[in-house]
Length: 318
Image (cartoon, rainbow, N blue to C red; front, side):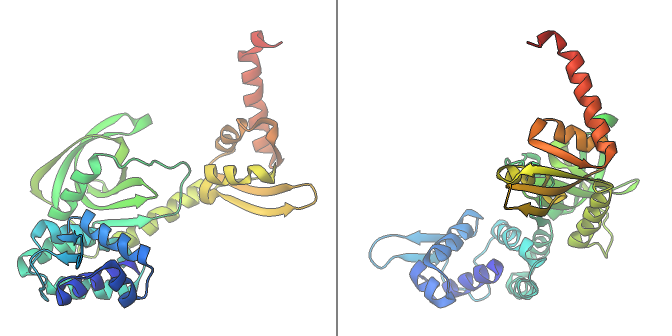
């Protein structure tokens, strides 16, 4: 796992003082490109790793070789653990390596480093379209989670309107570049989309967080409930295979290919959504490119939408 490699890279630099990408690749049995990416990732995360060009150059950790990692400042340690933390939920080996690295840090840095490692969970499965830009709010939320401070936020609840509240930030979820905040409120645990937070202010009030809270487990329960709600209605459609990738991109995990007929080049696909109307709204734009086989409820909703559009734009008919 990448977390193991990054830790091993740091320890190698501490032991040898300096190492080239080629030497690192050979030592860890990885490609030269991977070794370079790992070194650049450490540097970009704020860890004091710097390249030295020219004859006899290589990468080294500022301050020289230190087996106790005392060369890291508090901010640098936090950056490193933010970088490594998401891998812990995936790999038991990464969790063990991270614990060893944590014990090597000076005592004064350990609390924030441990909080940083648990601050973010990465879920790569998609829920529809992707948001590529990281919201500016995420950096401040990240700091509040690590420092364990309450935040005062203004939130756009869409149909429920705007609301202002003080919450306990427990963790952040990066779901394919769409960010969510899991927080404690006066009504219990709640999930907020970072891109709908209109304003945020970190307070000096300490966070109240359950001692048994686990970010990965909490997110798993949230995903299960969302998936249950989003899969309440299913429809089966036929579509030309050449458009299948586009359909999958739009529906994410709610698109299941049943079969592909190599004779006529058509695919049968199962799609899910909360209601027949939700499915119809998503499918109406495809027009004659799709054929809804079942159920009749989705077909009826499509017919209604078609009639509404035909009436609204009848004056434009040729």
